[in-house]
Image (tube, rainbow, N blue to C red):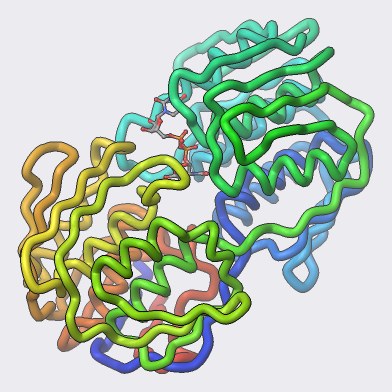
Length: 417
Ligand code: UD1
């Protein structure tokens, strides 16, 4: 089994370039099936989830070419085929084929999507939305069969501003007759990224990035071109790392509005940083203060940075508390953090106490999920001795060239097959 091996406590300096956002790219690729012929997506991250999505695109008879971080998709021979379980379970984002293929063909068949095991993660809001547009949804064992003679635009109110449901309904609504209005929509930057792709290919979308999004259906779309936004979670992970072991570490490719909640929290913690243009420079903070963190939907503190910031707070002088409001099982990383000499206590299902400061010590650990894995590689980089992270494939699902990027700035980190 592959593992990441880290010898900790090296100072990191130099520049880390942020890759394209995983959570945008995984929606933009299925969205490309809406185009009649070609579309191009630039700045695509090189991560495992993208490899699997390309396999699904090829299974659907699309031609995909990859060159210099851009992928060109030819969907002129697109065929609507059931998506096999071995592909759809590889990641959660496979559910975006539901919205896209429903818009294109009025029918889609696929298995329940996969993704990190961090809670129940139902997709009832997506399904309810498809039904409101006129689709019939049949669930046989774990297969979804979604059909619509025609989709008709409507006002849809989301009970919760789900990122996935907002994007999926934008995709489905692009194939509906008339206008769809999504109320209480998610406002994450990934939504804006997908909307800009839809607009570029010819769908009228208004209000993306606000709570109300309007989509005028249009099936006659083509030649979509889009740049994937920089990955705000990758960016936040490396900023957190910089606060622990950076020496004028430069994180290049930031959009500060996308990481506002993290930056505010870092200021409260006592971390100093400087932003010039798209580059943030950060050095080790020697006086880390304890804080309370509550995860929320955008623009609140992102749940995907909750596990990375937990590692930072193991170094704070005092006790910090984290409240996880999005997922009910997102503290699994703390088992191994404690084995590395941290003191964290799960107080209730969604409340964590972290007592610092603790000198972490390298040992063998297991990455249970993508961002939990991130909290462990940060821990390994600040720990004394050697940390071996097993099941590290989950980390490669979200961090493009992680070993190469960290080695370039001075980390002692290896990937061993
Ligand atoms: C996306 C991100 C993920 C991030 C999350 C929240 C992708 C591929 N993944 O996940 O990294 O952690 O946003 O920022 O973009 N929910 C329901 N029913 C639904 C949909 C969601 O109950 O139909 C619940 C979920 O179980 C979860 C919460 O709503 O508790 C948030 O989910 P959602 O915003 O949909 O996240 P994802 O799109 O799955």
